[in-house]
Image 1 (spheres, one colour):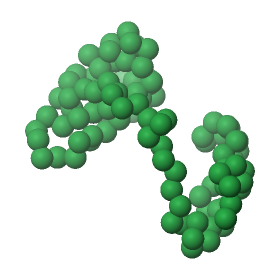
Image 2 (tube, helix red, strand yellow):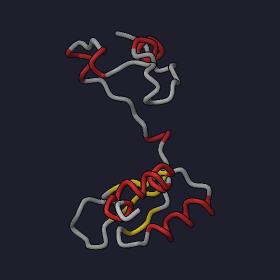
Image 3 (cartoon, one colour):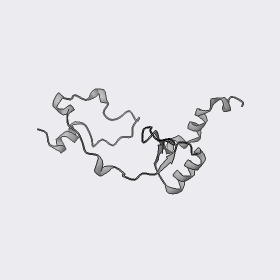
Image 4 (tube, one colour):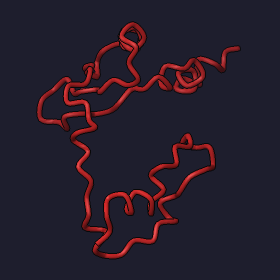
Length: 112
C-alpha cells in the first residue's frame, strides 16, 4: 500500500504549473491500477463550506461588482427555481474579461 506522500509524488501533485501552460501531467498520461481507481481524497478540509452565491437571473454587471468589491475569485451560480441542481455554474474573473464577454455576443461586434 502506498503512503499519501508516495501517491502525491506519483501523480506529480507538487507541480504547480498554471493550467494551459503546456507543463504538467495530463489525464491520459496516468497509469493507474484497478485498486488505485477505488482510492479517494477527502477534499472537505480544503473546501469553502459557505461560498458566495448569486442567483442565475442576476445581471452580469451586479455580479462583476460583487466579485470585484469583495475580492473574490469565483461565484457559485444557483438556480432561481427549486428542483434543479444546487449549482448551475461558476463565474470566475475570466468570465468578466472584456474579450470574453464580447465573444459571447459576436453580433454586437459585427456592426464595427
